Length: 249
Image 1 (cartoon, rainbow, N blue to C red):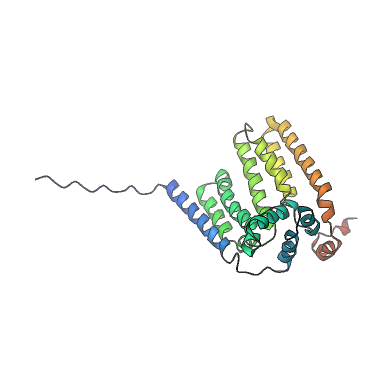
Image 2 (cartoon, rainbow, N blue to C red):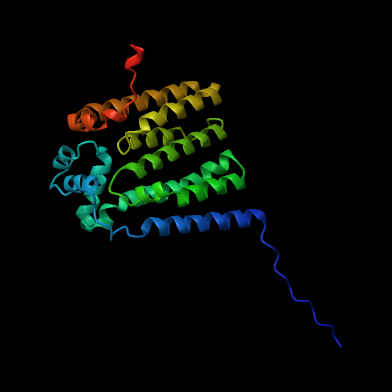
């Protein structure tokens, strides 16, 4: 008689396999939360202002009516509405893409900066954050602020990891294009430059060139778009939230 061969048992999943599975699970949950009621919720007042702008007939009219909304955000939503219609879901599609993209980009950035456990904790916090979920399905540019901040920091960290061997063009273009989608990116770019300046002393000429390129891009955006977006009513509305430095004078 031949003894029965023992059944082959599957090896338990290795820690990297479990980490990847958890990360993919968070990605799926992030997409589900950000898709929920993307179309069913009515536009509120601030969204309606953006919607009225992007429903104009031409790009020039869109930019003129867009007030403080970043120009590339307006034009991209306008292009989407021309192709796919003007439902709430279509108008919010760019914010959804930026919101989900932020979650996807955060993971490789976190893994470069820390070990798996705190990276997963950060990913979970971003996935379930009520603020980040809400901004991902609002017709406003705020999810784009987060997306380009994470993208620029990830590209800067990749440059640091390669000792500046590759990635300068991608970083420069991401920062320049991002300024058209996010006003707040202007505060993130100097941080990325400072980190590279300190981490890569042998590459400081390239860091300086990147800074000049971003400064030129900001100048173009300012003279073409930003200076026309200064609105006296918005300044008066938000003036109470600005820092008060009057005591220093």
